[in-house]
Amino acid sequence: MNFEFSQEQEFLREQARDFLTKKCSPAEVRKVLDNPSLSYHSELWQQVAELGWLGTTIPENYGGLGLGYLELCVLAEEIGRVVAPIPFSTTVYLATEAILLAANESQKAQYLPKLATGEILGTLAFAESAGKVSSDKIACAVQNGKISGSKIVVPDGDIAHLAVVAAKSENQQLSLYLVDLQQDSIKIEKQNTIDNSRSFAKITFNNAEAELLGELGQGAHLLAKILDRAAVLYAFEQVGNAQSALDMANEYAKKRYAFGRQIGSFQAIKHKLVDMFAQLELARSNAYYGAWALSTDAAELPLAAATARVSASQAGFICTADNIHIHGGNGATWEFNCHLYYRRAKLLALVIGNDQEWKDKIMDRLLADNQEVMQKKMLETA
Image 1 (cartoon, rainbow, N blue to C red):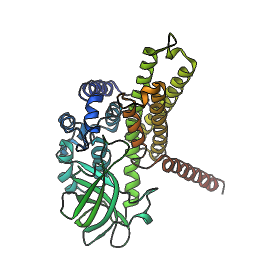
Image 2: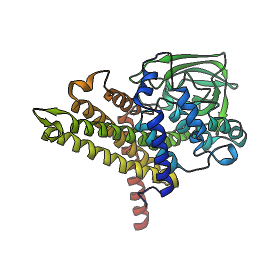
Image 3: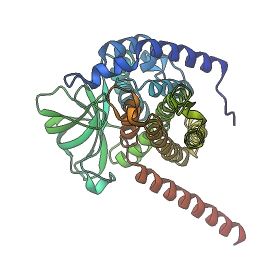
Image 4: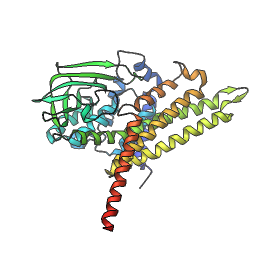
């Protein structure tokens, strides 16, 4: 297993970092955060689309770049580093991945070229209530090709054109459906969250047209695979966000003086910085393992994805919270940028299921692996 990115991938990182540093400063993030009428930074989104990033993993014959998941992981980390206020994750990690995974050729030809250019924005709608999402908690249903029901906290649901929706089919089996969100029979209400530089919405369907994605009754299986893929990519965003918080705290500790000394010379501050670094490096190593599993479609992906997700969520919270602490009273003010990273860390830790849900997945997958090993040993000794 190679734990380093290639020279080409590192070059992509340098180019992405240079571009985003120039085009997505904290001041640009605040333009969206401070303006309730804005859901995302449209100018930055258009520039990202022109660079081809939206089509990173989309095959060339569908208008994409035809690159791999490692390249997408690199971009995700850099986007997380600047807390970019654009619907990149929902369109690329969720909608595009769902279509690549389950769509037929006609659906791929119809949607992938538009997703690759940013002509349409996509999202995934699966939650209907607080807590863990399961088949028995989903009431959204499809009858005769028409979908009815509601979904809550849909990421970028107020600006997306296309949604992948988890709903019950006519035989009460959970399936996935493609839904055009510009239909008159759909009501969309924007919802406030801890980080309003990224938008969320409640979507209510009232006999809207819906198109089956994948096979009937395969919704739970497909949803699990989509979320596993997304977990790795979100982990890289979280790592990038945590790295920025650590860099910000370290820089402040070297410049801020108290009692005639740099505050970074105080043992309490040193310990916080070391703790932040340790948590971040643990998250990064788990994210790299997840990237390997994702890029090779390894059998270990479900466990690797859950581990990366939990580790990155914990690192994101610790690094962004301690960044505020190291800045002292200034860190809690609106004028300082510490809260930008803290808000994003909290949001990313919830967007595809909370920390406890992914911890439960780790446990379930470890138990399943252990049971499989025990069964093999029993067969060998029988």
